[in-house]
Amino acid sequence: MLVNYLPIVFLLVVGVVIGISSQLVGHLFVRPHNPGVEKLSPYECGIKPEGSTFSRNAISYYIYGLLFILFDVEGLFFFLWAVIYKDMMWFAFIEITFFAFILFLGLIYAWLKGALDWTTEMW
Amino acid sequence: MLENLQRLIQLTIHLIVNKLVPLTHPWGWAFIKALIVVSLIMLAVTFVTLAERKLIGRMQIRHGPMRTGWHGILQPIADGIKLLCKECITPAEADKWVFLMAPIVSIAFAFVPLAVIPFAKTFFITDINIGLLFILAVSSVGFLGNIMAGWSSASKYSFLGSLRALALMISFEVPMVMSMVGVVVFTGSLSMVTIVESQAHWGWFILSQPMAFVIYVLCGIAETQRTPFDMMEDEGSLVCGFFTEYSGMRFALFSLAEYINMFLVAILATVLFLGGWQPPFVSWPLFGFLNAVPSVFWFSAKLLLFMFLYIWLRGTLPRVRYDQLMYLCWKILMPLALLNLMLTALFLASKMNILIFYLLNLLVVVIWLSIYAKTQAWVSANNQ
Image (cartoon, chains in turn brown, orange):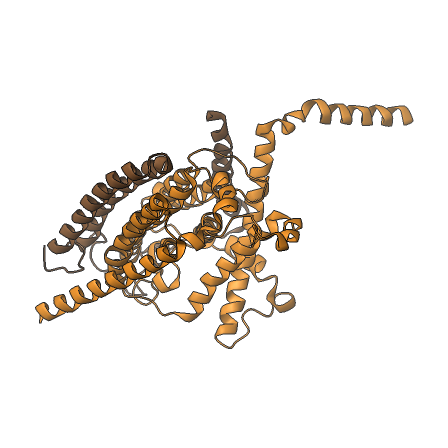
């Protein structure tokens, strides 16, 4: 039923209104506003900021991101399977064993390749 | 004069009955329920922050806030007023609009998942048949606020903090989802209301899914970035994580969203594993009188117990190193969650005794942990 989804929009609206209004009230009425060069510079523990913000980073973050996409999408298939599991029992069990086994092999492959290890030397 | 007053009263009644009747329409009622839930959650958040400071104070043998009101009871209100009156700084190099939007995105999507939670026997804002999936999807959108904040601040600490937090959150999402599937296998439905109701038949799922519960709790703590796993505001190495550059009300919005997310994880633990609004020992006739207590009491009691667990862990445990945390996620929790799923499917298909199921669970955990220990020993031997 699509109608059941309408209250979700209410909550979204309430959240956005809270977010905007609490900033706006402070901005219009109470809070001070006197910026300065020192105040507006990025915080680096009190010393002058050094170099560019977007410098080189560990690639491992992105590797984890890739792995996440793989495994999360496959996690979604598990939901579909779980909903109908009790109607199919053994057939579904054998099917999902194959699926999980392949998923598991993928994890082991990533593991052996060193994608799960936190090193900066490998790439 | 009297006649005028009478007409005024009549007009008011007419207005209330004929113009405000849409409030009794299901949508109007849902809107009111949404407002009730949001305000109650905000109230709960303010006082949980106070409870956290008091409890952690006690755990560290001090008093916590004592000056504002009786035993510091007005402290959250004082904090709120202070944050409202503080200057909001937008750094010169920041991407201004993204910087402004980030806390709003965070807070808006923190509220949305509450729409499908059954807080009491008859009190839920709406019941959709993909409730659990919806919660997972929407609570992930909240991460977007973190990235926006970290990227737009143009500060190294913010950027690193958001990268770290994001990699951690998405990693722990995977075992978390897998542990939830274990519950869905039992219920055969994703609707939160059905999940709670089916626990009258199956018993609380913490009893039939102990491994999934442990995995869920660990992942939940990592998702909300609480202390043993709080990589995003690791004060020692990153100043305050992705909201380093935020001050005043914007900072307050971020921490509000963070606390609401904590509540969400606690609520999900209650609904999925601890029986939701159902009283304990529900199937024993001896404890039938517990049904007389309003169901919202049981819900909030379990919720607050879980929140206490959060605070307790924060007061007790030191922070885990980042790479070890990632290993915990990918090399321990993720395979165990998969194996737990297989075992649950086997349990349902073969109708085995629950004690054998527990034994198998224990066996799987022990075997996997010893394999993991072997591989780690092998890796460190090869590195030297």
